[in-house]
Image (cartoon, rainbow, N blue to C red; front, top):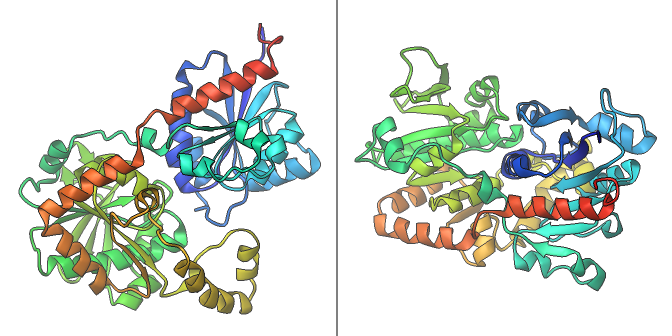
Length: 430
């Protein structure tokens, strides 16, 4: 009997794990051959540090290889512990730096497929390129590369599967007659620590004028309760004058009718109480009338469900923003790095027309983006204006859903893997 095929997948940031890896792994349920999934997590300046832990919780993944072992294997050929290549398999790139996937494919002598946003460097190492939208494929200029490039849709859409309807969620959270505001402060430690305090202070401002508002926090699985509590007393909280504590869940703590278990609750000195949930992000998105979020995967997921949002990019402290590649190395230099980041990041950001995915896809501002030196008062004013305009929210919702496209990309990507495997191992698999 043939050994299971190796499915080697590279992924390296929270958005890629939740938005790309999980739906692709789920779509493999109809794969025609037995297989084993090994996920390699290369180095990444945007990593949360919890990627290995979260990926290991995916039942179908047999093994996770961290950054250090990944680099060592690529450079020296030293096999990661308990990793024994089958001799037949495929490498699938799901975001980050194409270099690592290309070099893994070379080291293992496996064909490779890449799902990218228009990047095709290391093209000779990849049998196929898959992309979400036609404008990404339009970036490909070389005829030889263009011939092996296919538009398959946005995989993130396949990840969005709410456990409850909007009506069910409103009943569970007790706000059938009141609007719901969802806070999505991110998953990377530097972002989360600052944005949670920023958003909680913003909610205090909004609720002062709209007391009926119900607010919840969706806590990323990449964030621990310790990080959540620390964010409420960290430098972000100090900057905004926020006085708040995190109360871990007890039996008497907020429990949405027994169906949704709160992780805990934030309580501010102003009397605002905000329940926190984990592993319920799609149900909470489906519930929300408006979300406060930073750019990234969340903006696509919200758009898929037609949830209006305010996208915030505070550049009050640009020196704290992680960068990739050479810029990241320079930015990490003692003293000089922070000075350069304070000067360069605002200039770089000014050249980006849109940061939120729905706006980028529509090439128009469907949802507001607040970028630069911004404050909770400004965000509260914009959010309050949107919450008070029901017809405006409905129009935004329709435009968002029309922009992101249709689900099914994960299954189309699996078809590409099947084609490449059949072409490469035709005689051995028959």
